[in-house]
Length: 203
Image 1: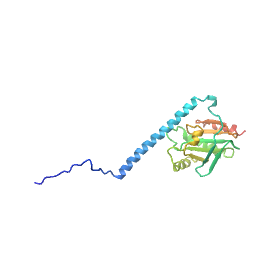
Image 2: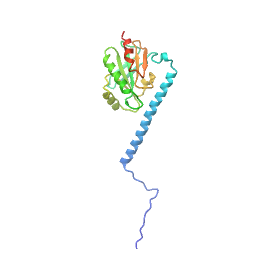
Image 3: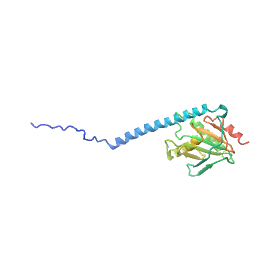
Image 4: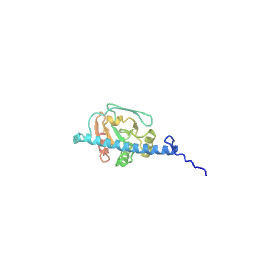
C-alpha cells in the first residue's frame, strides 16, 4: 500500500485573495470612513455655531461688521469679485451639496426659497451661492446645482475659505450685505423673514 503524503501549509505560503474582492473591501471601508467624517464635520460645525451664538448678544445675532472680500471662480468658470460694497446689495447662500441628508433639516425648502428670490430680484440685487468644499468633487457640485435648478452664480469653496471668512458653521445659511458693505442679516432659519428683510434694502 502506498503511503499518502499530505503537505501542510507553512507560514511562508501566501493566501491569494481575488483582486475584485480586495477592491470591494477597500471601497466599503472608505465609504464608512468618509460618511463618518462628513457627519463629524457637520457636528463640529454645529457645535462651533452654538458656541458663537452663546457669545453673541441676541440684538447682534442677525447682523454685524463689514463683509469680508470674496475672490473666486464660479462653477461656470466666471470670475467673481466682491470688496468694500457695491451698487447693489449682495445676498449669499452658504449650502452643502450633500443636501438632503438627515443632518440638514429643511435644506430643500431653504435652497428653494433662495432660488425663488434670486430669480424674483435678479435685477435689483447680486446673488451668490457658496457651496461647501468638504467630501465632494466638482462633478457632484454640478449635479447638485442641476438637481435644485439653481440659477444664481455658485462658487465651490474648495478650501472652505469663504465659509471661514464669514464664520458660517451651519447650512443652508444666508448672509445679506448692503450697498456699503455692511452685513445686515445673517441666519440659518430664514425662509419666513428673508424677503421682508430684502425689501428694506430697496427703499
